[in-house]
Amino acid sequence: MSLGYQSPRRRRAGDMTWGIIASMLFASFGFGGTFSYERSEKLCFPDDFIFGVATAAYQIEGAWNTSGKGESIWDRYTHERPDRIFDHHNGDVAADSYHLFRQDVRMLEYLGVQHYRFSISWPRTLPSGLSNEINEDGIRYYMELLDELNSHGISPIVTMYHWDLPQALQDLGGWTNPIIAEYFVDYARVLFDHFGDKVNVWLTFNEPLSFCHDGYGGLDAPGAHSSGFEDYLCAHNVLRAHGMVYRLYMDQYKDKIKSVGITLDFSWLEPATTSDADQKAAETARQFYFGWFAHPIFSKTGDYPPIMRERVDTISKRQHFTRSRLPSFTPEEVEMIRGSSDFLGLNHYTTYLIAKNKGKISLTPSFEADMGGIVSQKKEWPKSNSTWLKVVPWGFRKSLNWVRLAYDNPTVFITENGMSLERGLKDSRRINYLDGYLKALLTAMTKDNCRVVGYTYWSLMDNFEWTRGFSERFGLYEVDYDSPNKVRTARSSAEYFKQLAQTRCIPTWNYTV
Ligand code: NOJ
Image 1 (tube, protein in one colour):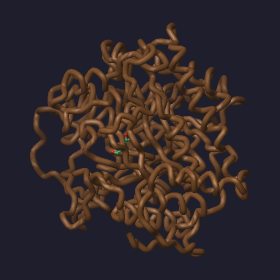
Image 2: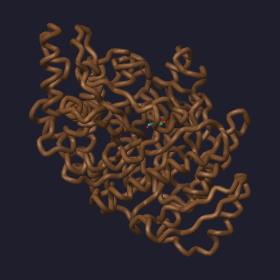
Image 3: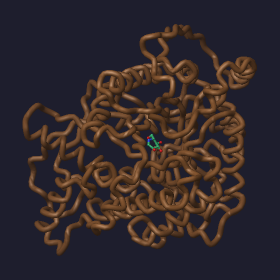
Image 4: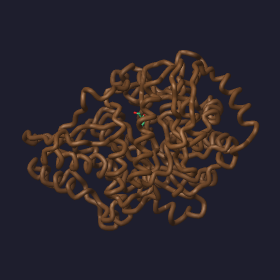
């Protein structure tokens, strides 16, 4: 099943000038190394499967205070608390894609991808977060980017919110204040009105687990560090906001826009042992980390997962709260949110082990205590350059199958998957990661019948990796942050990905550099 649009890239197949342009670009982006590929007939994705790459506004755009852009929570946080960022850097300039987006599109064209997933910055379009003041320069910027993509036959997939909340809204409590759902709807309406003709596929939110759990429950921006409390309030309002935007699209924009979904992150959670207690703890953890957002939207019954409701209610009582720390939806809200997504955008990177936490539950609230599992990873799993990201391809297949069984085989679109390494162009370990994860994905599709329609690599190029600054590089293209014009250079993995995107078959590769 497709996401509801025809990839223009496919219509361009056979364009004779393409190879010439590509080889010029190849030279201009300076790939150095030799590869040999064979086309493997056996390991191919379906003809209508689409390949693309992803980025996000704060991580690449820079121009943090240019031409009317408002301040975001990540601007404020990195400026006021550089100590909270591993290398003390910020996204003020990042990869400077605000100025260099035409180069980015040339890179996409070189890769031959069918789609580009990027996000719109809420404070660049609405500086105070509210729709009474629209920043025309922000509209112009995204309009030009969309036109550039369109003229190169690359379909945009646009995320409305990839963590850069307008600071003015955070001053009102951000995602913990219920009013924000109304403001998010106003923002979505501005996006649909201005860009609806050019964007068929929209994602409301990127990884609410990350920005609620780590931002309101932890030390990502805004750094509320209020686990088991503000993270639940954040999630509640995000789910309401998502449902409301989906209903807005269904009621008023259905003729203009093809599909609206949400991106959720799901790391596979494997029981640490075969004991019943660990099996049960792992399933509970899946419901807390993934079901928290997926169950209200994708299950038949809607609302939070019953086990989450039960555990947080019980533990809240024991902690002498007068009401559960997990808020409740009204019956109308349950219905509004249930089924509010045309597809599931899935981000998957890694796997963890879960063991039952046999310790006493503390009086201090926390998401981890509510969840009741101890999280770890196996020492022998291959490492990346991110402490949390170990290379475990089989976890991808298990995640996809869990989703298939839990939510009646929904249409899944892989909106992120990727690996960080240190600086360097010869990234055979990234190619190895891709090879393993793509094979796991293909097996889930062909052997297990999981319904997956597209794959998106994170990321097109190196970018600002949140509290890890520029120290972790996920790009198919390396960015030289020291050069004034942020020179982008293709890595070996870009050549691999190009083969993949253009043939739809997993390349067999000999690393002969
Ligand atoms: C998830 C996020 O969506 C993205 O912003 C981040 O850079 C990658 N994963 C890698 O951590």
